[in-house]
Image (cartoon, rainbow, N blue to C red; front, side, top):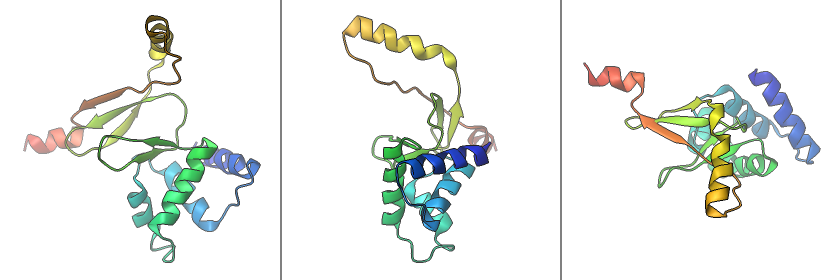
Length: 145
């Protein structure tokens, strides 16, 4: 599945006249193969050996290009570093309070919340985000030892 979504992302970039550099492709590949919702630093550290001349700024600039093209979502959580998600369809996140791990959670039943919120508040609702916090299995196991 990652390969099909990667090819789709490459096609979107090409259709917006974004040149596909080796670094850009490697960043996209990393995003599509990682389910960890990485930070720009995570991406940089994973690719620096392959691309020793690539800077963290290059990673950030490419993530901005991807975000502008709609192929990546930026996830912001308070003061901590932004994380990036290549799954742009509606889904939610379960976040570990201990280690910060983020796991995708699909639940289709919340779309009517936007309609209700619009009706009750008069806002023009554009989007919503649901985050569920808890302790992941690995951290739970560690705390019981």
